[in-house]
Amino acid sequence: MEAMKISKRFFAFGILACIALYVAYIKCCLDSKPVMGATEGAAESRGDKPSHQALSADLSIFYGIMFDAGSTGTRIHIFKFTQQPKETPKLTHETFKALKPGLSAYADDVEKSGQGIKELLEVAKKDVPMELWKFTPLVLKATAGLRLLPGEKAQKLLDKVKEIFQASPFFVRDNCVSIMKGTDEGSLDDPQKRTVGMLDLGGGSTQITFLPRTEATLQTSPAGHTTSFQMFNNTYKLYSYSYLGLGLMSARLAILGGVEGKTLGEGEELISPCLPPGFESEWQHAEIMYKIKGQKAGEPLYESCSNEVAKLLYKKVHKAEEVKDLDFYTFSYYYDRAAEVGLIDKEKGGSVTVGDFEIAAKYVCKTMEISPRSSPFLCMDLTYITFLLQELGFPKSQVFKLARKIDDVETSWALGATFHYIDSLNRLQY
Image (cartoon, rainbow, N blue to C red):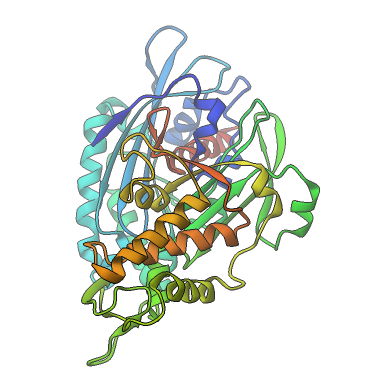
């Protein structure tokens, strides 16, 4: 478990997490309605009498709990906020903990899925004062892992989580558990008009989000890639899209020639030119074990792998021309692979270009032809990242900032989603 505090630059960087539409509709209660009133009003509908925990005569404190159910794990974010009357609430602390595997791993054994959820709820009980339990919203949002499951299996998992939530001492509503749409994972802007975008590479999907500067971007974007929203008394138009199936783990399977959710037949194996020649092993993805094998030596590894990656990405993503003129932060597997090959500091992060990823990919692929590394997928992963970024419209000279945290807050959409949920409760009251 990891505790974090946020600095004054919180609003300047806009959290830079995968927040999207959940943040998009935040009003953050800039008028006289305190956010605690949202939980109070909702609590009264259950017959509970609301109560503030006051730090002083003018300062109140409240909490929000968000579960992020991703493809590779389930994470809990416990946010602590303070608020002055008539002011925007401020994040003062976050508690974070993650468990593996993701909920989708229990698609065929729903009962086992509850163990991890209950374990994370115990973390929340220790972090949130007992007197505020019944006023603290509890929500779970599922992302790519559950979106990839058949609807019936996904729903059974959600129903199990909802059952556990309803038995908890926290505040829950009928909509406390849901699967996010692809456009619901995004970013936020800089209130000082200097905008930054974000790129996130998860296991099952990848997201791109930014605030367009040109009307051409809005006019030429495919349906579902843009949306309008109000925030802080301003109206914005946001470009935000999540590509399901193009996360790093799902891309690996596709490059290998496998099909999501489909097991191999007896004696069948996946052979790929992206793996070292002569390499043979097993790889588990979404609870399915695959036999994998490298292709015999022939064409150089990087070139042959590039051909496979290019086939996968062909006409799969939209190329927005103006992204080359914007600053972008990148997260998740972008960060992990850059750190693994020494492009950035593993703890502090850093800056890299598309060209840096390409150079690293070529070097790793070349060395793997001679001496296979302990990470047999590294050539494939780096090649995929190189091509994905270019397909999204970024030139080789594009510089990205890689980070796990912004101002000591774990980067994720969860904070924005919590704000939005509390604000929606507030709107129900008024």
